[in-house]
Structure formats: C-alpha cells, structure tokens
Amino acid sequence: VLVAGVILAGVIPTGDRAGTTATDPSASATPSASTTVEATVEATVEATVEETVEATVEETVEETACAEGGECQVGDTGPGGGIVFYVASSPFTCAPDRGSTCTYLEAGTPIGKSYLCDPNIYSRLRPAEGIGLGSQNTYLATYCPDGTLQAVKEMTAGGKSDWFVPSRDEMQLAYDNREVIGLSVGQNFAYWSSSLGNSGGTAETFRTDINYWNSNYYAGSSSFRAIPMRNF
Image (cartoon, rainbow, N blue to C red):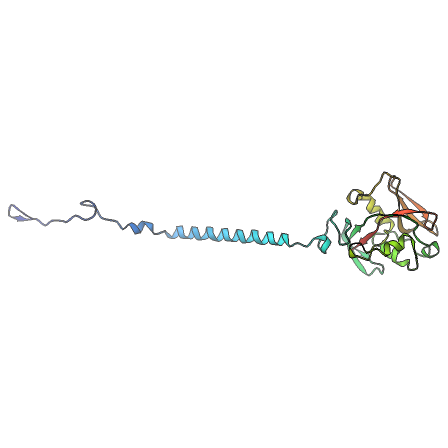
C-alpha cells in the first residue's frame, strides 16, 4: 500500500475475522486418551458382570434335584418318591449287609394294618434299634412268607426295591419329624418297627398319639400300620 510515498507492508487477515485464526473442527472431536481408557474399562466390567451372572444362572438351573440323585434337604422328595425327613451330619452305616454308608432317610406312604411276620422266624433276629438298622432287620427275615415285612420287601415305589420297616430309632425320628411327613398323631394309630421287643415273638410298636413305645406280639394276634422307609 502506498501512503504518502511510503510503502507499508500489509497483513492479510485470515479466519472469520481479521486478527483471528481458524481452528480445525476435527481437532476437538478426537477423544482424549483418558476418555478411551474409561470407556474400555466400563465395557470390560459390564461384559464380565454379564458373563458371571449368566454362568451363575446356568449353574443354578442345572443343579441336580434330590429325587434325581442330588443333594437333599429335609422335606425334599426323595429318589423313591417319599419325603426326606432326616439328613445325617455324617454318613451312617446302612444296607442289609451293613456294607454301605448313607446320609438320608426317606419315608414312604404308610401301609395298612397287618401282622408283622411269623414269630418262629423273626424271633431269631437280634434287637437292633439304631439308625441304619431297619434295612438289616427287614431283610434278615428271609423266610417271612407274608405279613408287613414281606409286603414292604416287595415294594417297588419310585422304581426302588430297597424299602424296609424302620428300626425303633428310625421310627422315633419319623415321629420327631411328623409334620414333615404328615404323620397322623391324634387317631390312636400304632406302627410296627422291625426291632425285637422285650421278649421272644414281640416287636417294638409305637403309639403316635401318646408318643409311647410298647412291645407287641407280631403274629396274627396283633395288627398295626407301618411306614416304609429307605436310606440312601
């Protein structure tokens, strides 16, 4: 520019206005390194939580039921279709030959009144009363041709053929857990055990209405109910 004979060097303004500098709009759109890290961490945490929840749900759904051989709690339906009423804190010896260990007792549907067995056969058995001994008591009566013992031995409820008449202690446990198995206690009902009584030809019987044990002759003259059981 020529002003009064003097040449002035001019500055050509740039940007939207003179004296300002244009900015690249793409520069502000680029995420910072910290923003990228935070997003990555959040995505990773969310994915991990989702995978954990899914795995937990799948594991819960696939848990084996008591009736199918899984862990049992009092009140569960057992493998034989009865009700689990006893869970031992540690395994107990069981089975007719006492060669196995069991943790659970399962009660089936009570059966009607009958005599227990032939006294000439059953009186030879020892008075086994403990938990896990009902099976041995029942199956040692090998030649008991009829009566409650034989009827229980022939049971196949739930596809199981190892039902037995409970020992005294097993029957007592059933009474102690009567609400779990729905045991009637107010109708003067009495139930056989497979434990010998206080003299030959007798077996221990239990009156549920008065919580009372007695010894009764188990041939044709005495007729009581029984609660089939399994241990497993």
